[in-house]
Length: 500
Image (cartoon, rainbow, N blue to C red; front, top):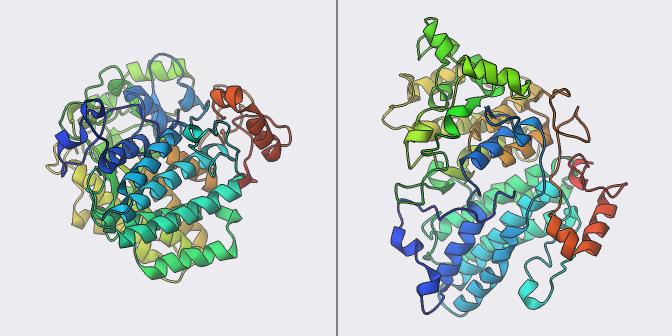
């Protein structure tokens, strides 16, 4: 299941008008660029599926364990096919640009169309390797069998499209139909620049000297996020159909526990985000531990034998996810790109010598921003068990175990761990692909319980191609597979160009 697929209702910014974005296009007499923009944003920015699917996205990177209905595939390292559904919006985006041509908002809509194509193409190539990009979404023009571009070429095209999108946004005017930034082109311009930094960092050892120079140029130009107010967020509301996916999900939420990966790290760091994300273990509080005691919290080994997990869960040994997830309609915004992530990317780039600057400052700014994001989820400190995140606490935190280390190796581990913690119950697939890049945090593998059939001793590294592609575009799929993998096998353990 691809995260960009359109499988749920629109999620709207609380600054925007609900009725405007909930318009039924079937009842209108004309289609506007604004309407098409809203549809394209929905298909790109929302996570598909119900509460259980949302949990699944976060079970793969081992943020949580789901202890109901038997061993859950993503938790036990079985992933399937992606989908190219997000490409279905490309014809509508082209129509959006056509309708805007010659008007005051042409640059704005051109920028948005390029940004979203790049956003979706980057996601897909990260998931599966070679994908259609240059020919993507051309079915209405008669090309129903798009060629698959080599992954290196997809990265190059994505970066070029984002650069061009940034140029269009720089010339554009604020527009309607946007539930992410309220149509503010200045914010979209920043997002286009920051996403380029993220794409470039994703290249890892494959990055070229020219691409490193491009990274430095983007930083020097300075059109970057300045704070959490620039985050590219999907904001949930109390309007029907726009709730957080975990709101009022009694079949799923109470059966979702935090993993020992995150609980143990939060406890090691003395990190109060734990109190915002989790409930204390009922068994531990019954033994005398207080809700505001780190030792009252216990995570599950997500790769443990399911039957044993279930027994321990029934004995109330684990910390389930915080009650606010089920209680609050307009829960944590879904952050697709954030200032905190930008700071961690820049800190890593400084250590690697791509740019000049102070890695410690970027690290500190990233941690501060990440902490304040979580504090804002519960502004009245209703659900944080009496352990609020305050400015004083953040200063103490950064002076303690979380203080920036002295060696480059330790610093990178800190940056990668903070970036991992940032994504808790957010974009789990994105977090997993970062783990794949860095190897950190180190996730335990249990060959006795793994559902990774082809290699029970390994974490999967890619999603397979959609089954429909083999049915309708077999020649191009087979060509892509033979180009990438020596055996031409479409498997979840095959190493794409990025990982070779």
